Image (cartoon, rainbow, N blue to C red):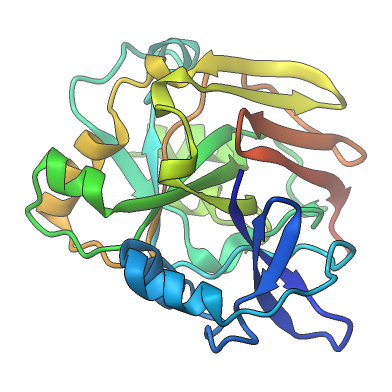
Length: 281
């Protein structure tokens, strides 16, 4: 399985690394900028990416710590995209696409700590998800065009201040703040090119807390496929290379607390692990 990871070299600099057959190649040394938009665009152009890869030297970097796999231009999320999750949230499965923003500043990478503020005394939930990366621009797109624009997938954890979300919903307010506290979005461990994966509907997504499975579902159960969701979103806002979309979470959400350990996993996409801590004052 091939993948693209972003890792920290011994001199403290981020590098894009291509993993294939157990060999790592340094794309940054070959001239790739530390820019998710550029990376995503290159993945959409097979010939150009192959040329970059041929110039990338091998590097012994298996122990380099993994980083957030790039800063997206936009991070969007699909809400209630599993029927069972919609029901556990107290509503019928939506007949129209529900989507919202996850601000890029809140995102963290694999191994980084989800920090629950000491002043936030109400419920916080993790939400295991698969995340799509766009390599082409979309506007007023068809589902077929949207499918062609997806270049890679990774895992995500949409951490949510659940009680605050409920309170804001009751007031008729947007629930932006409940989704966007610092560190309340985990992403990684690496981007896996779409063509390296089996059909998305054949994958099983799992969310663990302290090694206990809380969430588990087939991606065949998504109410909106990635292509249809992106086509709908593109009617309302232009989408660009380097934008990402969290595809929705299964049923089974429940509170977490400082000291917990979170894992999101799916076949072919590896494991995204993050500890939970109480934020320092």
